[in-house]
Each structure stands twice: as structure tokens, then as C-alpha cells.
Length: 421
Image 1 (tube, rainbow, N blue to C red):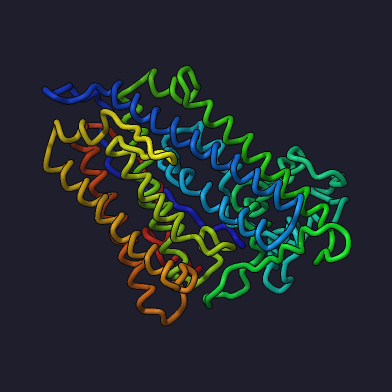
Image 2 (cartoon, rainbow, N blue to C red; image 1 turned 180 degrees about the vertical axis):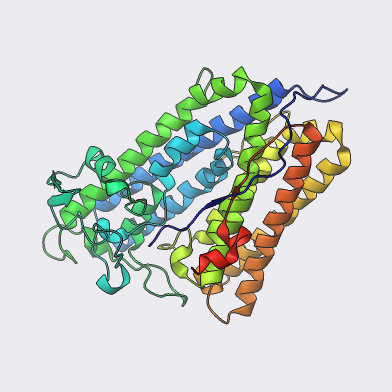
């Protein structure tokens, strides 16, 4: 897959001024504390479910079967639920943004990792698009020979975005997804990837060769995911670096929160992850393209945005983390703006729920992208329109609070003609 173009849109630019506290309004410091608590809980849940995925992967490698492969796939889907909700902490926190590419980078030229259909994976701009690390213990990267005899987390880190090409994704959720499902060669037709469990059988019965190295890659990738999530979870605990940065300047922290919400709503989710694929009718633009679980990724991104604004997160075990929120700050300034934004957030979740229901009813997100699928296009357009509307509501909240944000944009929303150039 080829990376898509990104644009930058600037919105709601007004001077950064600390808003005076009104009667009944929480302090900015209290809101920052809740926000950091939500992040701490979300990343802790992401770590715990990744550890569950690691156990399922170990079981698959130890005894490959239809059952152990299905269990590993189910564990991957479960691990995505809390992680996608943490994406609302992106874009406003450099510590998160500098790290995020290691765990959730996409799209990827999966031929870097393993066997693929050669006609479907050609990328003339990427010499490593068909490198197949699993089949080749010796590689040449940037003119230098790389010893890939032993597949380790350190090797995967070396391969990740090799030669400065973003599509060379060697680590994270989507590398693991590909190793569990394999390529989805169905285009905009029904069906996800169909990797056989025999791709992990040792000795007789191994399909597509190199089953031992494929297992080693999958094991290393899940180990690295757990390590990376351990790092990020620690950044949000008491005394953690991400928490300390926000606590040092609560007023700018409020701006960071709203920047994250606006950028995820608009440029990233509405634009790059959703509208772009519809414009191109291209299933390669779906976020979870091997598993056909893109509808869940989008749904939980929407839930995560609402979580952060309202200061409320339901943990995997059902426990609730909540406290003073940005919503409370906005409500104290202008109850009407807050009420409208809450309604906009609920409306977006409603549209995402429709998308989720359609996918679970048999029309996967990649099928919605198909040329001539008017029903699918209407579902996608409804989500995009709701996300754009809620972004305008976020901008109104920014103005009410007297702060400023710079929202990431997307050519698909801001300059559609550029998409086809």
C-alpha cells in the first residue's frame, strides 16, 4: 500500500489565554488530572489486552490449529478495543505522536514481511515492498547487508520504516494482523484475509515455507508491542513524563486536549481513514484491511473522542474512570455550546454504530467502498459529515475557552482535486 498525502489545516486560532474560573467550573489542573487518568487507564488496558494477545500467539506457535489461530485473531480484535480509544490522546501530545508509529503505522507494504500475491504488492517507489524478511535471512537495505538470520524485536525495529519509507511497516498491530489473517485479496467483495493455520506448522504440513521464521516474526512482533505499550503506559502514571508535561502548564494542556480531538475527528478519521477510501473506491485505504475489522477501529476512535471530552472511560473490566472534564469547563462558560457539542459527539457515535451494525450484518467497510454501492457510500458519508460537524463544535468550544488549536487536515476534505493528481 502507498502512504497517502496529508495536509495541515489551521482552525480556531485565537490567543492562548488562561480562562478565569467561573462558579462551579473545575480548575484547568483538575481537568488535566482527569485527562491523564483516562490516558493511564486506556494504555494500561491496551497493555493488558496485548499481553493476552501475546499468550494467544504463543499458544498458536506452540500448537498450530484452526482453534489456536481463531483464538489469536479474537485476542487481536479484543486488544484493539482499548487501544483505539487511546488515539484521542494523539496529535496534542508529542510524547504520544513520536511513539505512535511504532504500534499503529499504516498502510503497509506487507511484502516486506512475508509472502504475498506479487501482482497485488508492487510498489515502484519501495525497493523493499517484496523483500519478504521471513523467507530471506540476508537482506540489503540502503546498500548495506542486514543479517536477518535471527528474527528478534531488535531486528524488527531496524526494519521499521527502513530507507525512510513509511510503508515499510515491520512492527505493531497491523504487522501482527497481517501475520494472523494474511492478505485480503477480495478487493471490495466479501471476505477477509484467509491465512491457514498450517503457515505455522513445523516440519511436514508447513504451507508457504519458513513456518519456523514466520512464528519467530509473530512472536517478536507481539513481544515488541507489549514492550512499547509498557513504555507508554508508564508515561501516564504519577510522575510519568506525559503527565508531567501537561501538569506543568494546564492552560496549554487544555489546548493540547482539544487539538487532539479536532485532529483525530477531522483530518485523520473523517479524511484519511474514511473519505479518502470512498473517493478512490480503494479497499487498500481501509485501516484494518487484513481482518476487515475497520468498522471497529472507527467506532472506538469515536468513543475515545467522546470519552476525552466528557472525562469518562469504561475500562475493559467494567470499572469507570471519570472526573472534571473539558465539557465542564465549556459548560461553565457557555452551556449551549457544551450541550451542542455533546449532542454532536453522540450523533457521530450513532453514525459509527450504524456503520458497525452494517459491517456485522455482512457489509464490511471495504465493501462499502465499492463503486456503485450507494448504501455503503451513504453510511460512510453520514459518518464523515458527523465528524466534520463535531469538529466545528470543537472549534466553538475552543473559542469559548479563549484558547487555540491547529487541526490536522486532509486533501480529501480540503482539496479533493489533489487526491487524483
